Amino acid sequence: MPVGIPSAIDTIVVPPGVYTMSSQGTYGDEAANQTGDFDIAGSVVVHGIDARSTVIVAPPRDRVFDVHNAATPYDVTI
Image (cartoon, rainbow, N blue to C red; front, side):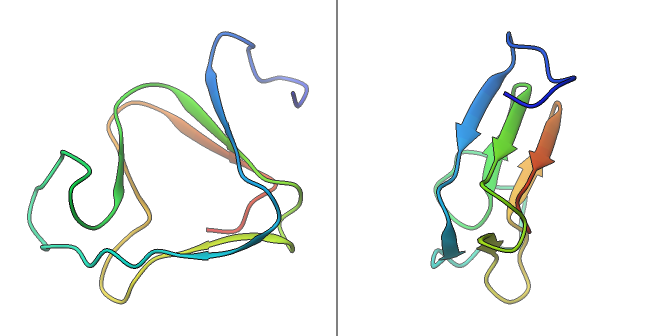
């Protein structure tokens, strides 16, 4: 766990790789993780190995995350 990130926050560990999202969004306010971006409702850390080897790519005209509370990317390229 990186210094300065409380251990009580949920952490998503993303292994090295390029992750291209394939679910196209509806360009509306869908918030059930059924299409498009990943909806984040609680406090979370998205932790990769390093920013050069851990990459998350959104489909065209969409975003990767829809954050409703707090999200901290650490060593990941979004």
